[in-house]
Length: 435
Image (cartoon, one colour):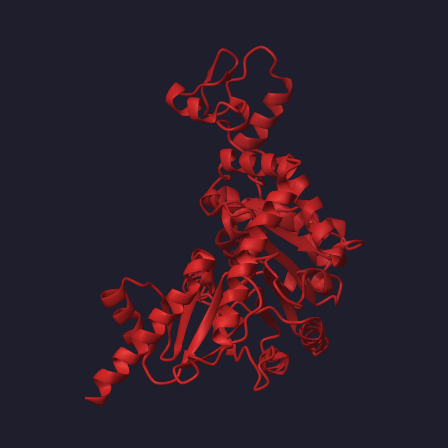
């Protein structure tokens, strides 16, 4: 094992022995090179005042070389803020700004030992880093039965972990914290579990209420007290889009410092929060550990980044930082929030008329981008194809009964027509079946 990796492991083992036990074999082996191209280039950048012939970029007239056809479209930005490599951990000013934003929007993080957010190539990359550091063959990754399908690829296919499912809702249409608890306690023999908490949920658009949130935290604490090391990952992809009286904070704060056997990891990003899907700017933040443990986890994380993508794109990090620093940022974001809330409210008002009750129920939703219909009389995939082929309407089929509808991309004025069309599609298939 590389001495740097060994040193990081010794730090984590001393400071947070249960966190050390959570590391995968790759997590134990990984490190960020202290002596190499990047470190030597950083040293040269500080001291090589005459000629700096260290890093693989090109300079011209004292600034990064660039094509005029590109710079003409980016003239508001200094070439040094878009063409140079960003550090593997991300643009320092952006990391600082995002940390401040997180604390402001999540009061429960205040006073908690909070690592500096590390920039990822959006949220999937952040989840992939968690998988690399903490998941190995046979490790349990606990997620609800209604989930984002990429978890299977990220944790199961890539890392060989076992996906453990529990029902998202109780019969009372609330978050099923008891089922989460049971799934966690079932891992006592393994002594370890990774829990992914995705709120607002994809695909249902559900965020638990405060009482449900406390039950989730209690379930994780009970598992820790039973001797299970829990990597508690909050996938906050749709953070901030809370339209009703649900939790309006990430659970990362409540999970921080909950128990020595619990590691709180927050995954979030500008992707959905700031409506910049193609920018691919996300963050991974470790919460509630000692300074030494946080520093060691950061080094391992940027080691993963260095060994995979090397660093994230600099231009999009600059664009996001510019937005966060703008005096117009909050007002413009509120404007978009109001539009999204209006769409969600219109969907719920329409479905609550009872007009479509013979065709479907809908799962509780109060946030995010999506909602899910539970079809009563037709197969979801059959309906999806029929809507696409006959009406030019796209939806997502999930299993036999569930149809996901993204109200995020439908203008409020078109929502009634959308659901009327889906309903007509159900009637079409019922008529065919009756013949």
